[in-house]
Length: 146
Image (tube, rainbow, N blue to C red; front, top):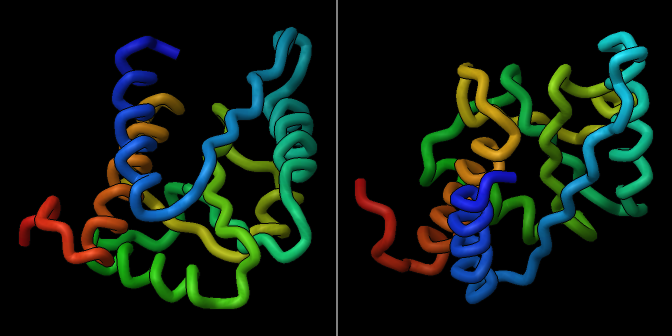
């Protein structure tokens, strides 16, 4: 990952930890994918993703076909999820070709940051900023402006 992404993502992580405990888990990219079809690559990545889930997790895929929110609406959605029956609220960014069918079938919901395509690093950064923004909205912090 480019250092400037890491710096920005870590900054938002540190800010967010003042509001809520969480962690960021990055599944390493597959090696030697040239001999794999796109579908095979999605399946292999899907297996790694599925192994990281726990019983009681609420799985939310970041997917271009998911629900789009305005930031205050995302904050309200997050609040409902956090007080619900979820043991953990898990957000998942897919690989370069998206998610396997098994991952889609396991997911509870899909949300979209945009209809546009972004690099994984950019999605992590945009999502971390929106996650932080949601926490500031829920805690009455003046970070967000309408």
